[in-house]
Every structure is written in structure tokens, then in C-alpha cells.
Length: 224
Image 1 (cartoon, rainbow, N blue to C red):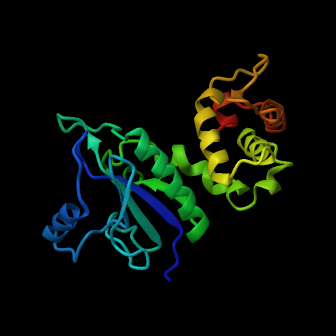
Image 2: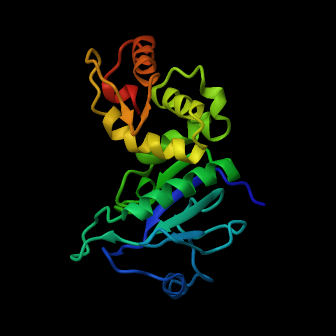
Image 3: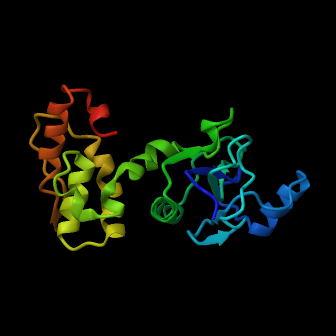
């Protein structure tokens, strides 16, 4: 098995709502002179996943950055006028989070990027490092119990949820669901974060601890 350090996300650059098959992508890439599809996995509109190039084979998805990386692509990425747009369906977003977690766990991924981080283009039409980068440093995906002393908001949240008996995947999904809410928190306000019947009791204290320890940076720096 080759060494893999990075997951790079792509979009197919096809109009919102139009499905694309692996065979189509394979044909596109053959027309470029490649031996076949350059992506390792394809995420369809309904959230289902198709395998592309075998993981153990180097992909063909980012010029100069194929060695040591894997390339995953979601179907979509432009509107009906072919302008860049984050067209991901709810099902695609859920699957993409799962695939990212699995890649970190199975292959030891150390970095999550988007095609646009290496080329002058919009693909994948969303901020992949901003959305998934925190997963790389979160020990929760290997051992949720080890986060019991975490002083970051996300770490404490994962530890709290792990303590309720939720699976790692369920806890991670919950963190993603409340992340937008955490982005709204202002230090000094009395805020309770409630997800269904689960009260995330440690998140605010951990948020304050990190804020205080880090020299009281901006809110954006605290939670990213």
C-alpha cells in the first residue's frame, strides 16, 4: 500500500441536479490521455458512493500533487449557468463527512484540501480545509475517551457526547450540526447548547478555557 498523507476534494463541474456516472468520468479522463478515471471515489447526488481508481494506485486529479494523496469527487459544483456553486445535497454532505473521517482513520490522512488550494479554479466550490480540517487533529476519531481532558470546544463536545454512549460517527455528526451554533457564541453571554435531549455541558467551559489560555483571541480563532 502506498503512503497516503492527504485527501483532496473535487467536484465534477456539472450542473446542479444532473447525475454523473463513473463511466462518464472515466470517459472524460480517457479523452485527456489518461488511462482512466483519476478520482478514487465518487459521491452521487443521493449520497451513494462509487469506487473509481483503486486507492493503492496514484490518482490523476491535481497536477503535481497526486503522489501521497487520494482524490474524492462529488457530483455537481456549478449552477445551470455553469457558474461555481456549492451544490452539495444534504445526503452528499453527510457522506462526504463520513468518507473524510474514514480516510483519516484508515489511511492516516494528515491534511484535507480542495482542488482550489492547488490550482487557480473554484473546484470543489466549498472550503474543504475549513469544513473538514479540524477532523485531522481531533483525537475523537481514534479514542473518544482520550478527549475527556480536552480544553477545546470541539474536543470537549466530542468527549461529552462520547460519555453519553453515542458512537463516534454519531458524535461527529452532532458536532457538525452544532458547529454553526458555536460560531454564534459570544463570550460573556449565558448560552446553553442543546442537541435533542443531550445537553453539551462541557462546551462553554472549554471554550472559555481555550480563550483565556490563548491570550483571549478573536472568536473566529477560538473555534477554528
